[in-house]
Structures are given as structure tokens and as C-alpha cells.
Length: 180
Image (tube, rainbow, N blue to C red):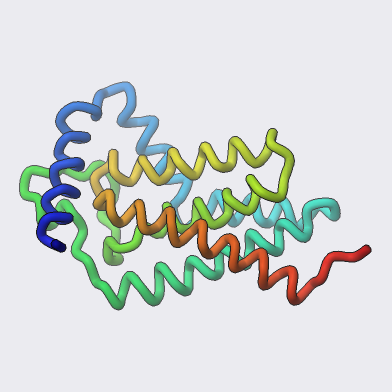
């Protein structure tokens, strides 16, 4: 079963490389993928939310979610599973960004993006939550476009990010119950 998944993952990446990469989209996708490096865009948004009294509770939830994805996805699962990056396995796959130094599974970009964006989507007005969710989708897809993750890495990152976002909400609600 794992071999079938590996073949499917590889076929999707080669399809993206062959039919979707182009001179217009490549610089855009490279920029989008860098927004997710180290979860930096989400950390900055969390700090902004923490700085504003009306959104401080949401900022606490986003911070908890980012810490959760760091611990679960990046520290625990990446090192436990130790999946090799796709460009190291698929000879004809070209990657477009600086070589990542960690393992491939799960996608940290997808996990952090969805853990933060889902909380923002659920807890903030749509004019903030919808763009956050759209950015999370774009960052996640960019990891496939630039050739540094398998689709299953990104899919698991998305699923784990969503799950961690709910967990972060519950934890913050337990520690800091809502007033009134």
C-alpha cells in the first residue's frame, strides 16, 4: 500500500512539474512558499492578534496551535517517520527553493498554516478569516509546486493542522474561560 501511495504521490508531483509550472506562476509560488517558512507569517499574525485587546483570546489560541504543530508535526512526527524529500527519490523532479534540512512528512508549512488559519476562520469575522484560510491553502499547494513535499505530506499537514486547531481552542478555553 505504501508503494502505491508513493507512486501516486510521485505521479502528481511530476504532473505539476510538467503541466502546471510556468514562468508566470513560479515566482509567485516561490514567494508564497516563503511566507510559510518557519511559520513566520502566522507568528506575526499571532503577535498582532495578541497585541489587540479584542483579539487577544484568538491570539492565544493561534499561538497554542502553532506550538502544537511545532511539537507534534515538526519535532515528533518528522523525526519519527523520517520520510525522505521527494526530489531525493524522484530522479526527474526538480525543486525550486533552497533545500530543506528536515524530513518531508508531514508538511510543517501546511500544518502551521491550517492550525492558525482555521482558528482565525472560526473565531474572527469573515473579512479576516477567509483570507487567512485562502493563504493557508496557497502556502500548502505551493509546497507541491516547488517540489519539496509529497501530496500526502501536505494532506496530512492540513488534517493535523485542523485537528490541532481544535485542540488549541479547547486548551485555551480550559485555561482561560470566557468571561460573562
